[in-house]
Each structure stands twice: as C-alpha cells, then as structure tokens.
Image (cartoon, rainbow, N blue to C red; front, side, top):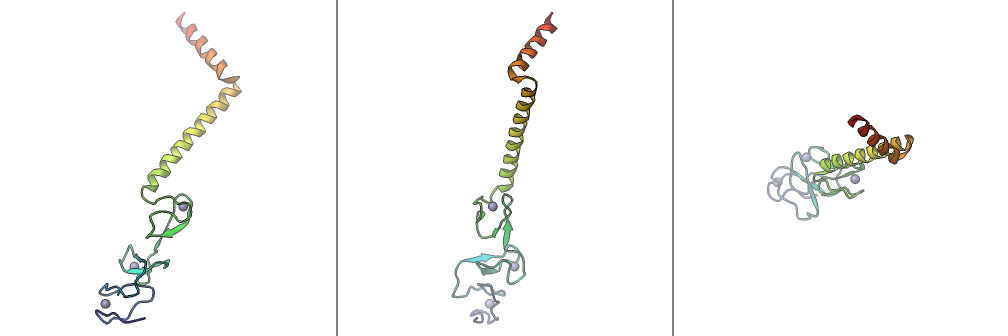
Length: 129
Ligand SMILES: [Zn+2]
Ligand SMILES: [Zn+2]
Ligand SMILES: [Zn+2]
C-alpha cells in the first residue's frame, strides 16, 4: 500500500483514493463511492473503509443486499430507481386481483353470477312497479 502521491498521507486499506485529498491511486479499478463520506472504496467492500457506512442497499422486492454502485438488484434484477413506486403498484394490482377472486367465490356460493344477475334484474323490475 503506497502513500498518497499528492499529499503523502498513508493509504487507507480498502480505499481506492486518498481519504484526505481524494487523489486516486494508480491501481484504480471499479470503485464505489461511499454515499456518506464520498471516499472511493474498492468495488467489493461491504462497508466504507473510511467511515464504515454500508455500501450495500437492500432490495425491497427480494431483500438481497446489492452494492450501492449497481443500478439494479444483483439477485432479482429489479432496478432500484423507482422501486418503491413499482412495489406499491404491484401490491395494488395484487389486491385488486384478490378482490376479484373473492367476488367470484362469493357469487359462486350464491349460485353463480348468472343467478346473481337475474336476481338483480328481478329486484330492479320489482322497484319499478
Ligand atoms: Zn492525498
Ligand atoms: Zn464513507
Ligand atoms: Zn432483489
């Protein structure tokens, strides 16, 4: 581990750039910027080598933790961008689906949708008289 070429500070294990002057070291590969202190970490760090902030974020769909550098979940492939909105949308659709199933089951118990319709028509005709 070399000292910083710019300011001479000792290199921090796990960081790809100097923690003091942010000068990148020569062996820079795919770095991950810490969302908290903005230091450049090695790509496979689970936490920032400088401030120990987590460099992963949990997927709200499958719960797997992915690097903050990746745009989508490494496990289920869901993009993090707008994930909360998509999840809410899907839950609403699921609820509607369940509601329709429930309605279907209820009308089956009462002798099928056909009979239910006939009953409704009969009711409306009754009220006209
Ligand atoms: Zn430096
Ligand atoms: Zn940090
Ligand atoms: Zn996921």
